[in-house]
Image (tube, rainbow, N blue to C red):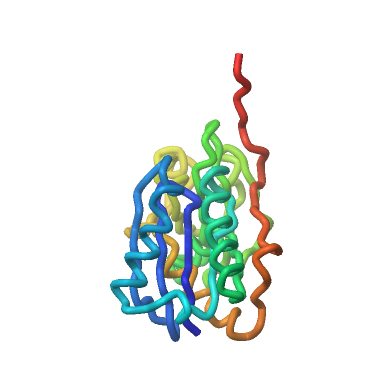
Length: 219
């Protein structure tokens, strides 16, 4: 199964092509504001570098959140347009699940954190195999780590931003060294599910916000 994966949930965006559990290529984008301008050119560059036409793709994957309100809309709408034009299936996965998969096995408890601003984080807690053990939630980092069992490994820009506060509450915290770009792992997680027939039409993709967007009214 040859899958194009797109992640624009945070400033660390990426697109990747995955085939047979192998990341064939990945383009990484560090951009807080301009994913809408860069994602399609990045996809075109990636496909050209691999010698692939759009017709060679068999499915699409996208992170559906939580994360940047605008970023989610960019990623989801991009995949919806590509899937609609090609008639190929697509699959949306939570960004926190993909983050946790990056550090599977690092500790008995895995904690994925995405910066939610307002002094809060989006949080997912997982077992050693990156299987969720509780519902995703949003709140201050201290609340997110209350009652964590044993040593825990943390990943994501929320963990990076609040590392000092996390260590103050969880002195045996582990922070695996990696760059949390998600498209490659997203594609690896999505490909077998798409191959098994779990893909949906583009109209079925829905963003996972966890919190309403902060919209400033004009004075």
